[in-house]
Length: 543
Image 1 (tube, one colour):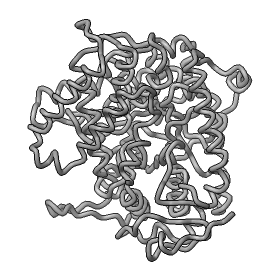
Image 2 (cartoon, one colour):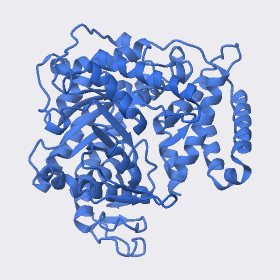
Image 3 (cartoon, one colour):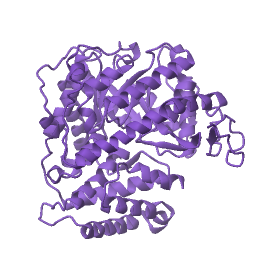
Image 4 (cartoon, helix red, strand yellow):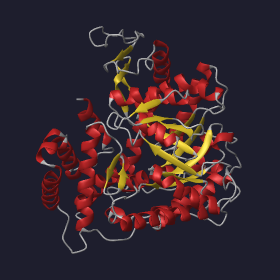
């Protein structure tokens, strides 16, 4: 049954599309985003695919229940024929052939300009992990992207008066919509919140697909947090319908899938197969992958991890995952993208800065020599360093010819538990990072510099997941103390008191620290594990 919008709940000036209620207030400067045509296009996607999405999300719950009961991951027997087949991905568009350095960040106006001007090959505009999904952030972000694609984007810093505009040569644009598990509460279709992924993708595609094609590029996307090839099949069907509705040739869309969940690591071939006419490869989303490694094995006392900082790419499970990704992608003729360097240049401390940049260089050298076709950075200051490493070791536009037939990865390799220690310093860092990131997110900022690293939702997820895992399994610190609720609460209180002293009582009171502390404590000490930090945080954000 179609539900007519209620005039009392629809902001003045909102498009009147049958069955759609827009509950967010109008956003200045973004009047052209929610046109009647765009709203109807998004509603059409929601009606076509929301039921299937509900079934896939229920499937996630069923899979997790089996894991909680002791089942272990393995490669799927029923898709063995796909893994053994010789299918190839889509041909590579000219402006995605060389992706040696990609920069990521939120969709605010200044960031978009700086990222496109950074010298990176690609900029991934992120509606997901680095954007707090306030209604204003989302609509302004859509408008900002439309302006950037049409090269009309400008920004003047109100504090400094400095003006920003695009250079003649800019990075290729890709966009990451939110994951399948999230909803957009401000946009209801037939009485239910729209899937956030379809809202983000639908608006971006509707407004920009033709403009991108006319400029010699195309609608390119990053797809986050998928847990099976069936979820990739859903995205492929979304692409097919979206292209059909706008009269865009089939196969115009290109999408890179982030392999950032443990189950997806066992279905890389299958994911590429589902998206093969739209595929632009896979990416090692390593921070969310670590979070998923904890989450999916949360009931296994043998799977308790050491400090976050010790779960490096040299750990056996991480090496296995990245090298399997390279082999899989290159066998299918698509890009294998490396992971994020989250370091921030430290201008105030040259010695610390040199040490941080040395880590970046070592990380990027490992990636390029392993066979990755490009890498990610979070800060424009790291673009020249990453480019220097890839230029020195990757003479062509990519390394698709490196098949890595020497790589042989088993389920046991992917599941080997990282080794190391759990320290009080690591526990305290998890508390500080988790609470401060949450507080900033609740104020509308999803990309937060903390302790010389650029933190986003993925690293906050690791922080709270580790605390929960350690408490739940009564893990011990390296000095032998068990990690109990009481120990955690004592550290939380001490760290927040120190933070209050550092920031000042006024700043602390005016922020969202009360909410952030309460949520972090609740998630860390709960009897059962919450699948995503951002789901309860979104309730606070929109309440």
